[in-house]
Image (cartoon, rainbow, N blue to C red):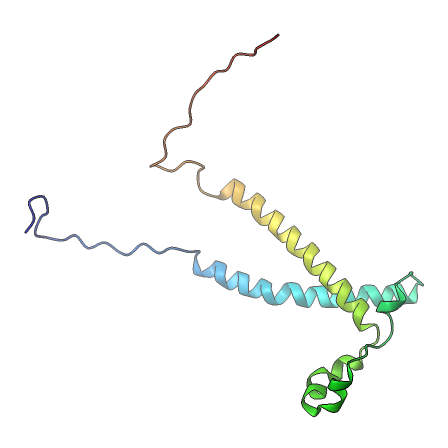
Length: 140
């Protein structure tokens, strides 16, 4: 037995680090929802643009082509064959990526604003108080 330690131990609940379980569920849901919305928005945007004669780069239009190795392999054609049926696949993929970046940025901005107003205090109980310094305005 130590000099400064009592013989009885006080049991405390272990402190859990990390976000609440509901936030993990929302994050998982958003990882599925944002790409789905982006792909649908990209598809509809390209379809609307083609119907209204928007100028798209010709490299992004038309059906995609795969390397010769893909056509020789049955396994690769099973995986990548459905892509060949999608007209303007490269334009849809590009628009989808742009929508994903845009939606992710908006959601991050909204989350930051909400966290700023509802989050924890800037200084915790163990932090030193901010310094109270009054500075003079110097003029030359």
